[in-house]
Image (cartoon, rainbow, N blue to C red; front, side):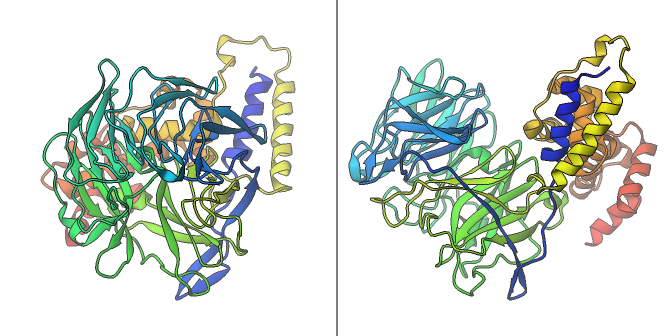
Length: 550
């Protein structure tokens, strides 16, 4: 007989992981573009007003580190949100305009920032933050040079790459856990808060749209940790919006060494998105142009910070209009993975939010899919914000509104009690006790295994295989895929195999269909033909011919 805790976990998963709905009816339409209402929630204020701080989710908790407070004064404190309130803790060094990078064990490395009030100077200091103990520890080395507004990224080999600086020269440095920090090479262009995007186990691209004195680049040269710098051809038409003081590579990551990033057309200022895949940049096709005006027809300010939710295959870009209404552009990039156009929708708060920061808002993706904004600059650097918001742009995982959540929970509870009573007195078998899984991150872990590690290419892949690898059980795997994606496990895996096969037939038209089937993970050519036609309405050969003509 299954335990009460197992069924209770399933109830929680069904309500919190699978509830919600798609986009509602638009509340405004401007130039044919529908605008949907953006759900918002006011969270508790920070203990200290903060600007140019680090924001992240560490140990499942929304966390802010450093920055400067009222009077443009750096602070050597951090805060984490737990139990409905912010807990203030001390850091070793102040990090006003610092960087952070997450290590595989969940700890953060935090470093750099201004050395004095008013954003003056730079620092050497580097420390680690352990979200389990909520403690900072000074590390036994310093940066290669004093830095502020730097960025960092972790390579799969364990090294950390640094670049970026403010009012001083930049360079690329590498932290080797065994050797400390060493200067790797000079940069071809000095940048502030660049994007550092790993493209292999030992290489990374460094790019940006702002130099180390705050001026916009007139060219988008890309530096490499290994090899020579270059300017991608598409950058002559589309320039990445690549200045991000809250940068994390995970915010742009859609797969292993694959990224999305916002961009601006240099001739007409249109907003678009660039893909980086296999070391090459290309333009993401969308099903319409991104609006540059708000619901009143005034211009929109779109912030350069970009957030990818890999589990939901969506990305978010936020903005604000002149009366402090907040906008969130939701990009659904799922279709682009198989060569179709990405779709998008726009959400906004119907009422202005006077406390929302005018510049430098800091965003982070919460585990439940909402977007948090904590701190930022209200009027100027002398008056940063304490305000914290959570926005829900039509997310499928947002909690269902009462009373329906409780009604459904009641039905599930009744079913659980029936199951428990029907099995009462039966001797427990060893396989009845199953470990709990974390509903909020299980889908993300499934995606990482199936998509990033391409587990779908393994013929005969079973739910039990996925459950064993992830340390959970087949019931949770089935329930999460069903509630998050609305399909069964076989349908979920078949979708990956069919999309992979389509990509092979598009990029390698000379490949035999039997080889395509094998490479895509189908157990036989017959299974390939049957599944492909069931999902696309065409045989593989028919689809292949149609793709040639498209």
